Image 1 (cartoon, rainbow, N blue to C red):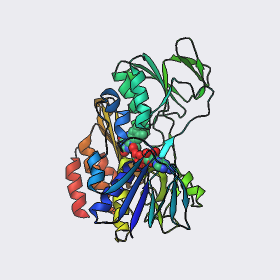
Image 2 (image 1 turned 180 degrees about the vertical axis):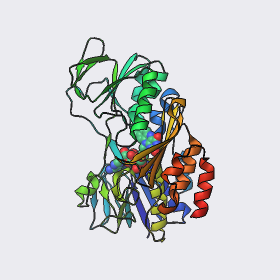
Image 3 (image 1 turned 90 degrees about the vertical axis):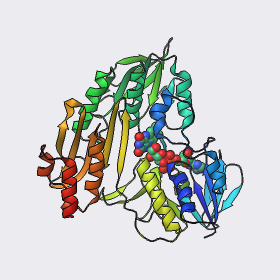
Image 4 (image 1 turned 180 degrees about the horizontal axis):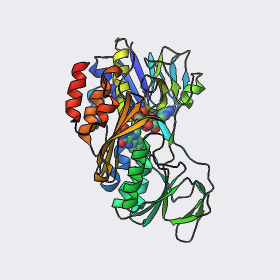
Length: 410
Ligand code: FAD
């Protein structure tokens, strides 16, 4: 293989090009980014970067791209794939031929089709440009309304409330982070944010954003109007799949790839937030939105492109920082699992072990980094040797010792 072209310079694209070089790939690498900035990390954007925007949280220093002979095309989008010719068309009118094409196009914010959504008081948190807009406006804000009670909305709520901004948060579902965490963890974070002054409007949706003399009013489905200085949209994301689907590749909540991250076209692979892949932990296809998923898939794919065979099977984990609280998740939970709580939620430090009958599926740790690290080790061993519900329930039993004993049994 003489050259690889990578579309998208987020966590997946940048880790891929770095890993290709680490694996000894000596051919030409082109990395396309439709954003003008040097590639940067997204997690700090809803966390410390808003508070301390000293320098952009770059994924790699500028020198990395020259040192590794990676041709970074910043501010250039891929507009179409000519599969027969193995050529990619670019927004500046040029094109690039490829031996292998990697789609690392990520996701974009879901925009609700609401009256008033295009008002200047409405903000997003996905890109560095989005967050620069927030930072520029922030000093004039006394009240902010956040739409969406998932990780990013809650991280923004946690941050802004500690900066003295009054926050209202609107969530359609009956509980926070409903798709991703257990009811116990949802409840704990609701109490935590409420104690910091965040006002929640659960099971409501926004019907319009109306202009007022001093700002905007967010109108809710129950008729309530919230007067606010700014609105932050955090209502989830949709994968960037159009480049693939326009080229005739299969997409279904993501670009569909097999367990080696290949599409049906042997010359095209996809990974990261934009890819739907067979995930043994989910028991079916999954499209994960996490740094771990993007970077582990990138390392796997780089090794495959350099000749190593195998299937992608990395163990999923995730973190979120909300105010002073840290949530870490090992494994993938799902609705209806049995919860076993270790530690006392009232102390602010605990973990929830999630079982499907006697099979440990996931562990959610709040302010308990040691539990999280132990859980990642526990979940990495064969299912039949993992912790049992009785062991998890036994509060006298030290988790570290349990890990050692089940590891020995494995
Ligand atoms: P992206 O980072 O979305 O990168 C894709 C890039 O491709 C983008 O720059 C996009 O503009 C570009 N692109 C798309 N189409 C084209 C095209 N046609 N031509 C050229 N370029 C194109 N995960 C965690 O695990 N923990 C966290 O705490 C956490 N916090 C987060 C906070 C925020 C504010 C956000 C937005 C995300 C957070 N995430 C977190 C999720 C994590 O950042 C994503 O899972 C990760 O960025 C996915 O990487 P990616 O490379 O697949 O996609």
